[in-house]
Length: 251
Ligand SMILES: C[S@@+](CC[C@H](N)C(=O)[O-])C[C@H]1O[C@@H](n2cnc3c(N)ncnc32)[C@H](O)[C@@H]1O
Image (cartoon, rainbow, N blue to C red):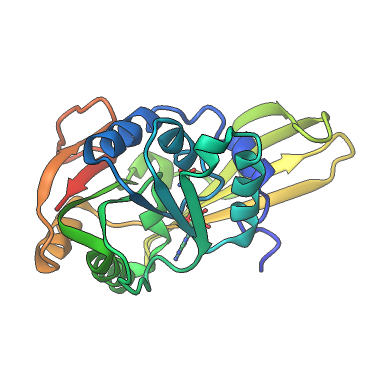
């Protein structure tokens, strides 16, 4: 595993995304509507998994990172039995599901689709999801769309500077983002840097495989998925050609 693997340190992950709350009610409502059990692909430390279980719906999480699943396990220990018993999780690759069990709702929250490499990787994911989706079931996901302003960031320059308090060491952590765009491979690189008071830095490097609306609509159509709902944010604002975010419910 790389030292800058974004999913190596679940504590830093939860610290970085502690303010990321807007998507939680969307996925909880979807789970309550479809009733579950839900399969969450890329469940990570349970940012979405645990609220779904707290809402009374059974959920199975899958993730390729044992570190993130350890983070989920730690958080589940703090939950009452009733919530803990609604959550099952396993280590695995969401592009290689075996279809042993099918679900009325499969979710892939928080831009995790950008971990699939290129059109071939996205096609592999859709075929894998089809195997685990009950006929008539819903596949719910969200993703980013191309953002030219973000891609024009200068390599090595600091953006979004903030100070966090590390939840374990209680020390202040200076943090900022760096980033650069690889046009040929269409990879948006985002590097989060965390610096402790002694100047020691930890880096986390996210490599986001980007695509545009038109090509993903074509791919979905080719793989037999139809939209039952879509929006450009979690409040339901309609899509536009220049939307930067895409929230989808597919069947
Ligand atoms: C952006 S995080 C989302 C985590 C969680 N769902 C949330 O909303 O906070 C993406 C997660 O997908 C996992 N992941 C990436 N590629 C994967 C793959 N091929 N199979 C399974 N999990 C994967 C990562 O380990 C990470 O935990």
